[in-house]
Length: 178
Ligand SMILES: [Zn+2]
Ligand SMILES: [Zn+2]
Image (tube, rainbow, N blue to C red; front, top):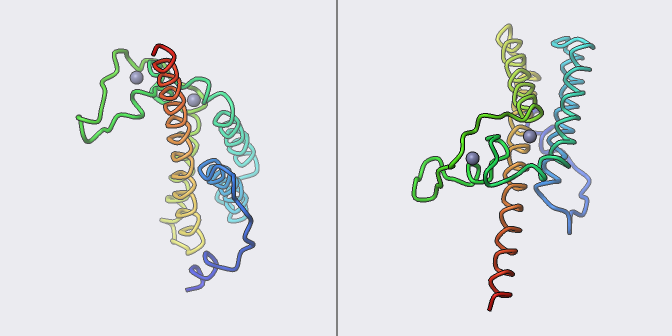
């Protein structure tokens, strides 16, 4: 019950009108992870040096999504994380999927680091929880899961935006032809 109260406590409502909700959610996700690292230090699950290392990578990933990621998205990218065709294809329904005509044989170091750091943080929390599961660690685990989902949503959103721009450009070119 205390956990529900702490999650649903009174909050200051800020106007988000005009702000991109997915980007706002992504910013919140990164802030949550940085706060979570402080908590893990407090619980002595991670030491100061590990916190410094994880924080640096998290900030680098945040910067990557803000700037480079958008530039690298392409329909024929050899990096699976940046491939528009791959990302927009439905993995369950082949009628909504397009097979890439290229191999995903390259990796983006930052995207890989982001996945590694998040999964290693999750494993660390789970292992610490196993040695006497505390409510606080369980909360951190659920916060991390939400933050991970938030980051995935931003990546999806950025790829969809890129696709929308491409569609608008195609429509403009068709109109110009007429
Ligand atoms: Zn591809
Ligand atoms: Zn990347």
